Image (cartoon, rainbow, N blue to C red; front, side, top):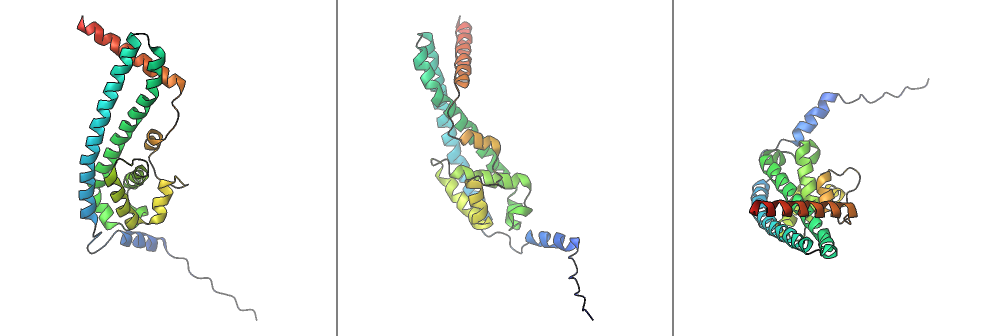
Length: 209
């Protein structure tokens, strides 16, 4: 008589919920959470210095381009717009990075408790992934590399590489990716920016009259 093989009973759904909950419970939490939080705050101070420097560069570039337009040096003004666009994108990226830092500081208790990145709130996952990605694109932000190392130790090399290399399944913020990409500025974008600077300069001259 043929013996019927018994099927292994399927695991109840509530057991998965318990497993996920246990992944976010620990007696002492992440031992390096305090170090990470302090490092992020130190990094924000470094970031603010870079943001202020970039703002000064942008203001000076716009003034130089406006002056070139006034003396009909259109070609020279046009050649300066490309770098101005890139500086503006970088400043926008810095602002996004700052917001991600605030998100992590606010949610450090979740990070401390959850040893699995998949059990974190999605905005926290995006913040960690985005800072990890930015660390590979912003060499001037030295402390960001130390933060990335802590999260790589916490959530693994696979999560780190997936976001740095933008592999399928990455969580990197799309606006951050756009503003940190080394793309060529389109001619239409340059012309729009030139028109904006010319219009702004014209209004400023009217105000002085």
